Image 1: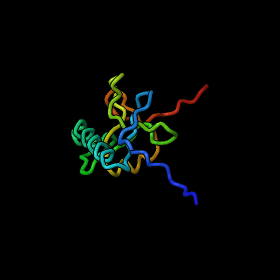
Image 2: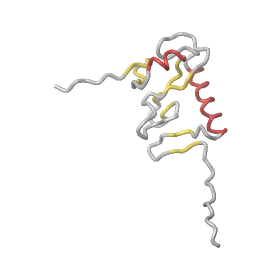
Image 3: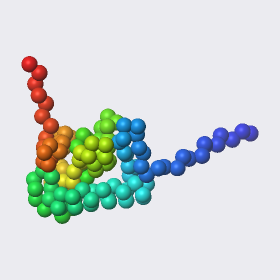
Image 4: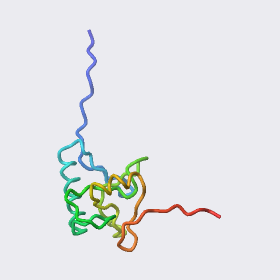
Length: 120
C-alpha cells in the first residue's frame, strides 16, 4: 500500500524582505516576535516615550503601522533607509485603539492623519 507523505515543512524565516524594500516580520516565530518588540521599544525611545498622536507618556508602547497592515502593504521597518523617512510610530494603547485603520504619516516631524483631497 502506498503512503501519502507530507512534504517536509519549510523553515519559517523571522524577516521577509521584498524587492521594494519592505520588511515583514513573522510573529509566529520567536525571533520575529523578539525583533518586533525590539523595534517597538526603539521607536518609543526615539519619541522619548511620548505617544506620536497625543504626546502623552506611554507606559506600554504599541507598534503602529502608518499605512496599515492590509492588502499586502504591511511594512515593519521603522525607517526607510533609502529616503531616511520615518515609516511607523509608537502609540499609547488608547490612541492605537482610537486611530483604528486610518492612515497616518510623518510630516515635518509630526505624525498626522492623511486626508483625502477631493478632486474638482
